[in-house]
Image (tube, rainbow, N blue to C red; front, top):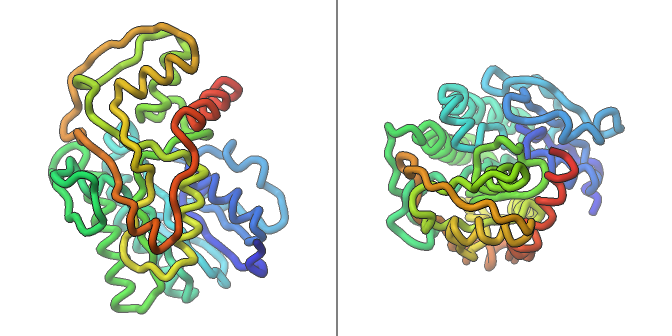
Amino acid sequence: MSRNKKTILITGGAGFVGSHLCDRFFNDGFKVICVDNLITGNKANIIHLLGRPGFQFIKQNVSNGIDAPGGIDYVLHFASPASPVDYINLPIPTLKVGALGTHKALGVAKKNKATFLLASTSEVYGDPLEHPQKETYWGHVNPVGPRSVYDEAKRFAEALTMAYRRVHKINTKIIRIFNTYGPRMRIKDGRVVPNFIDQVMHNKPLTVYGDGKQTRSFCYVSDMVDGIVRLLFSNCSTPVNIGNPKEFTILELAKLITQLTGKKVGIVYKPLPVDDPKQRRPDITLAKTKLRWTPKVELKEGLSQTLRWFMENA
């Protein structure tokens, strides 16, 4: 699907989801500009694209500015630490990239009259009192807790994006990403899927926080990328949930990973982190009706592919 060599700029393009987007748009015939300061991204994720005509990598902290050429048609803002380990260790950079980085990325979109897509998150719902979470739900967020640096950065980014839409008439999109997993996640990412994979690969017991009955909805990265692409070229201007609505407890995830690896490593229970959500499941009615999108990859299949990648690359 060629887009006549239109140019797309992706901040955070060397990260987990960002690098898959670089692949998708490059393969679809776009000129791709990847901007990343590699604070949590990895150049290895885009090494196969470096030096190829139509792909450009700029190492830069987008919170300080974006030195991009003109003629950009689309700006996708994916730069941000995205795991609890990262944003708790990097609280100020997380807040900066949500505020200043979003401002700089919107500035590029405004200057180029480009379509802008913000990568927001299910974390804007906090520890939700509504289940499943619809886009109309305003959330239940602790504004001063340890997770607030990420939650509030994304909530501010959404507000700024909508302000630019109203004031500067920019064509904007907001995606609320629910738990995504797959190849290119960092083994020390801190999120539950790479945590469990790292532990089982090293024959260590799986660490479960709380009683393990808290739920998550896991979306494989290829499904997520497909949803992002559909949203970018849609007429949706309000936030859209993209995630897999099939809900699993953390204990169910642990059991499935041990089954797939054939290892009996046991479980170690630790206290639940502060403000950790008890339930997380997207209502994807809007994505189904407006984008004609539903996830296709079942958890067992996606975990098998993810396990294979980690075993080959860890």
